[in-house]
Image 1 (cartoon, helix red, strand yellow):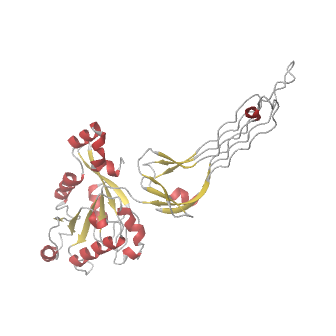
Image 2: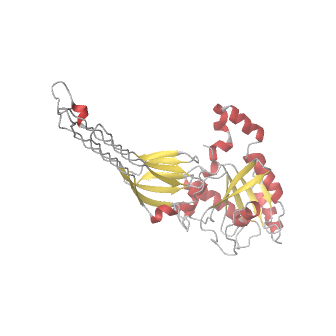
Length: 355
């Protein structure tokens, strides 16, 4: 089961208490204080892992806690620091504080680590309180408690291109044609119930991440049909492919599908309509396709339209070439970006998977 939203309760480790101790050895009856400090409590750390696909692990294990710091000891021995609690999350995870609603962190770069909760500081041993007027201090401080909190984790899929369309428009079929992703394909609505990301490659060095977003319906921007959970997965896509059933297989007018999709994206309110997009007219192998495409082209202008058939493969190579030409940097630009870090923020590849 794909899980893209979950609540968790985490706590960092408490600091160890400082030690109250005095040196007592043979022939040294008044050796003075030698109590060591307590160890620091462990932190709660989130590690961005490309090998984690969703938040399913946290659904069944919402509680996590780092280890406490060890207490200080005599002979000026410091307590051992508590072990950190490192949790792996997929790229695109956003963490919100449940009580305040504020965003705490956004996990994007694979391999990066983010401290969510800090462990408490260890207490001071009585060695620190020795002075000229207090040769035998008896006070030591306790360790500080570690931070704790209740958080909401929300996953927003990271991809270069997102496939948007009504249910049964052919999005899953398209991503299966291009990538090794294997989303379920069947002739009924809402076959796809969660996002699926595949890698479209060209040669050995160029690739493009394509996300199959579950089908949208009218009212998705008001959360109809789990609209919010679907729409948020295209927020980070650099471009959108609006897949239209141009044959009208579900007894809907293709241009009305297009207008409805644009309206729902606009009402969602995250500037989705400002993203670059193209129209993918699917099912060119059906007889109704040609007439509908002709009518569609008269109503919808100034937008690139690609005619394809996922069944026969017609038009797929032309569409693939367009995607790599417009949405993936060339090898030369990638090399220039690596040589000039100041300009790397303008490169498309850094904004999606390396940012």
